[in-house]
Image (cartoon, rainbow, N blue to C red; front, side):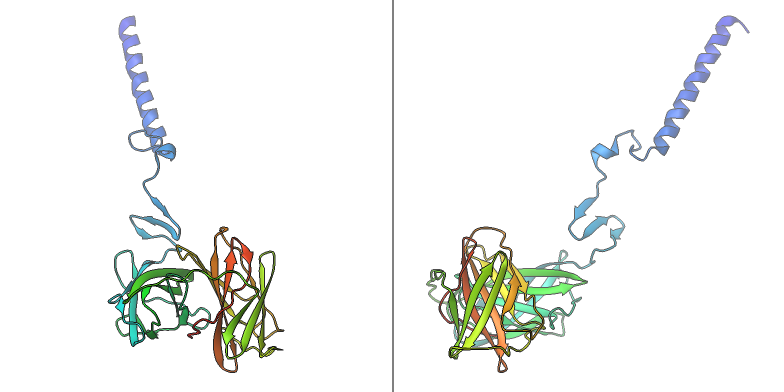
Length: 296
């Protein structure tokens, strides 16, 4: 074989080896795609979700197949002062009815109803219907837009979903009451608030005498919901103490902004659940005078 032929053969063989080596390297490199694209910078095409990662093969570990996405209220319009049935269902992203609920604070479902101006607060517990929805008897006191919060746990994850309903009639919103150190809860009950950093401490009196025999309510000494003025952002807090320990009801409350909030404290005494309403003004804890509805 001539020198020229031998050189040509060598160059051809070298080119074949380099091509094979590149193909093998691409197959073994996990950061490269079939076309050589750097997948570490281009992305994988999988979307990240709060509850886990969903791929083409279905939900990953830790994600609920029927993850609750929204609450749908039947009808959506009600009459003031009349006893009516509020019916709703929780739906997943595909519009399917969610049926997987955990018992949380002694109930599978907690419903909070409040008017847009943060009056007419109610905390009620619905019953499950045969078709997987929920229903509860309710009496709306005054006209105006109301928000319905469905507060529950599904597959170990807590959710609070909301829908708006309209109570027909002339809506005359009230201004948020100014902060004050005490609030009345009806039948001679009064509640005093004190704060220390993020701790809120409530003490109950009846006709001026301390109440030190509060009964457990939803497995705790009390129940506290805070709603932000304007957008009605929802905060759900539970008591720190054992169910029947001492006089004070203590909560750790960390407000996410320095807006005004309306806090609704519920406690149980002599077999009745009572509600006292408080105002947080710009992050400074105070209470507001005035009785409120104490549905339970």
